[in-house]
Length: 236
Length: 236
Ligand SMILES: CC1=C(/C=C/C(C)=C/C=C/C(C)=C/C=O)C(C)(C)CCC1
Ligand SMILES: CC1=C(/C=C/C(C)=C/C=C/C(C)=C/C=O)C(C)(C)CCC1
Image 1 (spheres, each protein chain N blue to C red):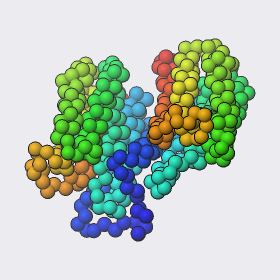
Image 2: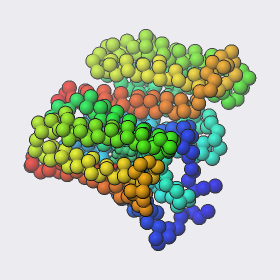
Image 3: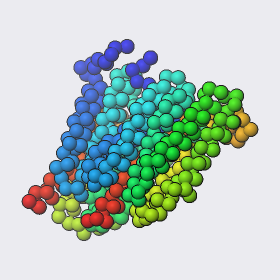
């Protein structure tokens, strides 16, 4: 076994694991080292952005080697990653809405929904594969409740109350959840049996997941970074 | 031997080692990077919270690979971890009670008790297994003296004197010690021979230890973080 894995020139999955890993590391350093440039109020948000990419960086390091060693999808590690980072993204929603008086209960509601979404998704994808469709449905319902909560529910109301840059950032994050996160159920359908079989044949789901992760994790963090920059600029 | 270990989808021990390791790493970064947001008085406490999770992260990294390679309980490494982190938790009690004039002697007393508890526990679990019950008893007595000291003894008095948020945090930490730490003697009884044999059969002790460690170490740290947040908010 070599000390480092070789990557074939046409191994796009290996390539995206490698680039993804590097991008997550760089993003983490960026968020960690710039957090102290901002008001205390924003530091925790930027720190959490950094934690999300840091957790991903460690998992991508592992998944990169896993792919190189086994050429198999590291489904397990993806879910470990998500079960830690998706709840942290819910924390981000809470943190930016705190200015408008968001309560911890909103945070816990979102966290709870995201944990349900991921656990039922894992059960369908890795444990009870012959019942993938029904587990996916439950997972999808939890996902839609999250979408509802932030687009139209109490989170939306708080964002409107906060107004200005916070409302703007909230809206962008809502689009991330609606469009960026929708990549994941597509991956699920491509990788499990069910009535949807065949629709997504031939897609390399690892490449799509890797691009999705980079967009969702780094993008999410940059929206929050940008919010802090805008508010700091207004103050000066 | 593969570059990275594969984890079976139903290997819950491996799973909790992996998630535990990641969670400890993320928590360490969180504590280390947020310590400077607080008054000097609280920085050491938060730094120590970070040290506790950092020490655990390194041990979990090792234990994760140990489990993957041998599928055996890494008892030895658990005790190495505890002998470093449990005394640091005793330091935390002292640090938050310093505002009420806690003396170093309180800290040394708690540290001494925790070292007795862990050394006798190790002797029973790994060295003199045929006398596990008696070593467990000695260890348990030391544990109960710690519980007494913080719930009803001099530490309690200091917490009452300090009042407010400090008293509140002290109480939460006391519950951690009484309920969260009680997980460990249960693991001991499940893993060693004695009159208690059979009561805890069939429990996967590594899973329980791993959940316990995450709750006790990260939770403990967050209580102290939260205390610093509350006091900073009151000052503003
Ligand atoms: C709806 C649905 C799913 C949703 C997964 C999502 C939404 C994951 C989000 C991950 C993120 C945002 C990761 C980090 O950046 C599953 C579990 C695939 C199962 C099928 C149904
Ligand atoms: C009472 C007792 C024990 C107690 C262990 C404890 C209380 C360990 C605490 C560890 C912590 C808090 C770790 C880090 O978070 C032993 C040694 C199992 C031996 C049997 C009797």
